[in-house]
Amino acid sequence: MSKVKGCLLFSIIGFLAVLCTTSVQTLTETGNIVWTLPFTGKLLIISLLAGTAGGSLLYYAFCAAARLMEKRAVRLNRRWNRPIVHRKRFFLLTWLAMFLCWFPAYLAYYPAICSYDMTIQLGQITEHAYNDHHPIFHTLLIQGFMELGRWLGNVNTGIGLYALTQMLLLAGAMAFCLFLLSGCGVKKSWLGGLLIYGCVFPFHMYMSISVTKDTIFSAFLLVQLVVLAVLLRRGRNSLKPAALDGCYVASGLGVVLFRSNGRYAMLVAVVFLATALLFGRKYRKLYGRILIQTMGVLVLGIMLLSGIFKMTDAEQGDRREMLSVPIQQLARTYVYHGGAGVVPEDDDTMSAEDKALINDFILNEAYQDYRPDIADPVKRNTNTYVARYRMKEFLSTYVGLFLQYPGDYVNAVLATNAGYLSPGDTSHAVINVNGRDRGLGYIQTRWVENELNPAGIYKDSKWEWLHEKLETFADSNGYLNIPVLKYLMVPGSYLWLYLILAAWLLVNRRYRQLLPLSLVMGYYLTLLLGPTVQLRYLYPLMIALPFLAVLCCNGIGSCNGMGARNKPNER
Image (cartoon, rainbow, N blue to C red; front, side, top):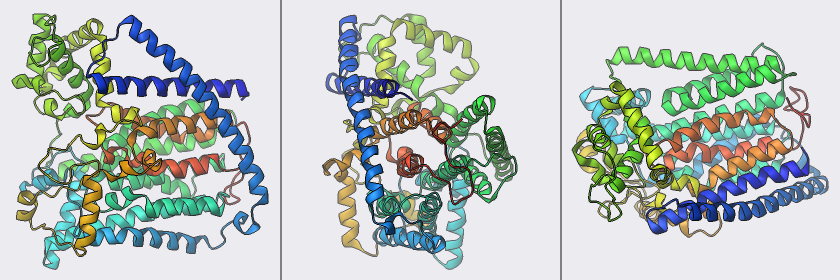
């Protein structure tokens, strides 16, 4: 790709980044954006000028850095350029290193961090009334460890064993990915950097001991993405599967079982793989093999979930989570145009018919509880029957209000997703803070005693001094006080980092290596259509980015001598 096209591609990303961050900042400061023609025009011009300049500079900086690293690689000590010989030993040592670095937090929070959806899942376990609002496979896993604890004489022991197993799984997944990278010609210096990242990045420590589906899902998604990238990098153009294909299928099955978002992300990947199969000239058998495996994983995962539902008499959960964006848009539009009396800007111009449908959809006048940053206050009072069984009427009102008040629809999406769109946003850190309970910051560690203790789960810290230190860091959102590095911890950086990675791969014509990013794109779409911004939602993409960036942008070479060398122009 020519320098002009590369510069243009980075400029487009720069334009979008400035447009989103400026819009989010304006909305945060003013509370509402009136999208007049002068304001919109001014915003577009500023975004175009600043984004083009910033994107162009970033592109040329990347080019200069790539040349510098190429020259430096020649001068590096041969010891750091040699491949790792004892890769199995390397795998075990890296696994142990990360586990030991996180283990003090395990002692501090023993038996585990029981926040997020733990109490809701505990209610399902206690009442034996299961549904799939939270992955039933994960709920049954928690129940299994609780039963193991009872057998050992203490439920707390069972939860402690769950956390220990989860730590081993997450550390093992990261160590396995380092093992794969070590066979792809990745230099020891980069592997060392990834190991340090695995050991000291603070969110790994907290998430590894949090009883939540997102940690297990993150481990499986990381392995699936890296294995897919390695398979594509090797370029073995055959329909016959190899051992690594088994890893792809197994990790994909974990992705499907532990989050519904995983299924939707894989559907997006199926579309891109099918497109590659149609237009890829040289690697059709490779694309066809991975496409068949991906579709097979989806079918097998759905069949397994169906079987589990029959065994447990579980019910389908309410689908209102999928309506988070329309709920926010309709609630905000009613607040500003429905005569609700919530904000002084309310002009009461909405028709009586539209008001009537919204009142059927949003019960108990819950639009008065509208919060720009989270859908839950309104969402829990919605009647999804209206959207499902009065679909024609619902869509007519929804589209009609969009045509009448497009600015409010845009503002609702920007406000809910501010944390994902702007690196400067800090609302993500205080979404759940209520002023009473501890442990409701960006890193959630809240302990609800009145719900956990009756089930036999209680705090039993083995290192109280460290527990207090970690609680203080979590409660004060201490990561925001770390200069520069905080931008690797805020959620608003990752969308743009992934887009930059995709652009750099396009510039270097590494088209095959773009396919793993289709999974990332699919997962990101579910986040942007979700109810709010939380660490646990973004964590799977946080953990995967460094591994994908190092693998996809690493120097051209074969993977462990098992495939063709990557050509500059991959199709």
